[in-house]
Length: 146
Image (cartoon, rainbow, N blue to C red):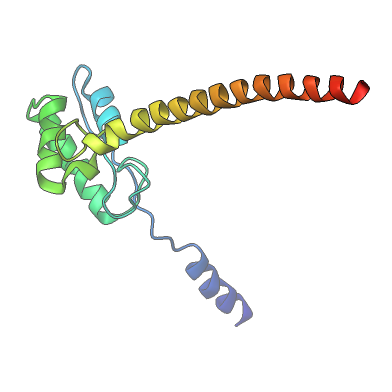
C-alpha cells in the first residue's frame, strides 16, 4: 500500500506544464532568420521577454506565425511590419522612428545637451565668481596686515 501511495505522489511530481520546442524544417538561412526574429519581437503577455524566451501561449502562437511567414518567403521587414500593424510599435524591441516615437528616440539626446549646457554654465559662473572673490580676499588680507 505504501508503494502505491509513493508511486501516486511521484506521478504528480513528474507532471509539468512545459511544451517542447518542435524541430521544424527550414531551408537556407531560414532557421537563422527565425531565431533572430523571435528574439527581436516582444511578448505582449510577458512584456519583458521576447517571444523566443517566453512560455506564454500567445508567444507560442506568434512564434508559429513568424515561422509561417518565413516559409511563405516574406522578408524580415514585412514580418516586423505585420507584427507592428497587429500589436503596435510596442511589439518590437527597436521601435521605428515615427511621429509617435520621436520623444522615445530623441529625448535622451535632448536631456544630454541640456545637462551639458547647464553644467558648462554653472562651471563658468562659479569660475568667474571664485576669481573675483580671491581678489577681494587678498585686498582684505593686505589691509589687515597694515
